[in-house]
Length: 323
Image (cartoon, rainbow, N blue to C red; front, side, top):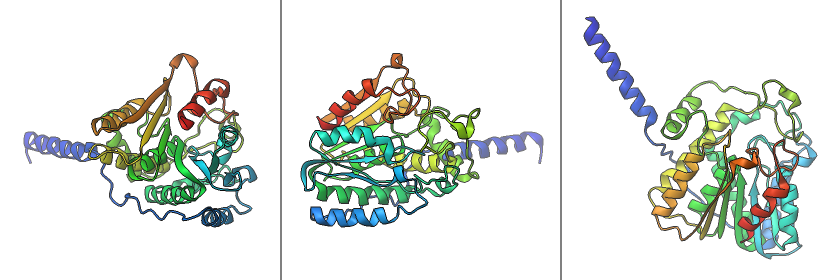
């Protein structure tokens, strides 16, 4: 083959590969399959099944958390914690929501909360697993209260956004710093980054490459994250965006919270989700950003988190959740 035709053919192949990588994510098999609990007692029975999964390999503070008033309440708040964290992340904020009269349910997201913080379990996390877990937890919440509010941070925020898009029995969905995109591959690069991360072997980067296992902040957090887990979260986020661009969200009220100058999450993708929901007539939609001047961490919930400030963030989050 002569050099010029060869280079032209190579350029065409590269262009085709780029188009395939950059096309919007539209993953299949991530629709809701609801099976709501019919009573408070049935909800408790399902929670018992989840708690049975919290064996001795799970850190005591990381087991599924239920703060209940002993009966069905007017509002239940279902909370999904963040990547590499566990239910303890939301314990302090959950106490405040409980004191306001809500039942609060914080299930342990699959493959999180192990006492062995160097575990490799996160590499097995799957978007369909996250979808199924979100459905199952929302089903449980239906039995704990009349009005269901779903809250999440990071990967948990993507799960909350999915519930807001897919579940008509969710009254309010609050997505805090949802991992819809990463700062290293913003905007239109997100689909390509997602596909590449899922195609390549998993890697476990340190949250802090200098301190490694001695990460500052809460001791129940894994000091490493999984690139495969991030890719699967982005895949679920891609499903949310894909559906949000095509039809109205199912939930009555939606909230998207971002952190100014978030070093982990692409806030532009969060804004894209808000625009998609607005374009389809979402009537009760709030977008709130904590100012960059506050210098907050991506994790604005865990009171032990370095760079967190519950004194500032909790009153705002409490209002956005319970409004």
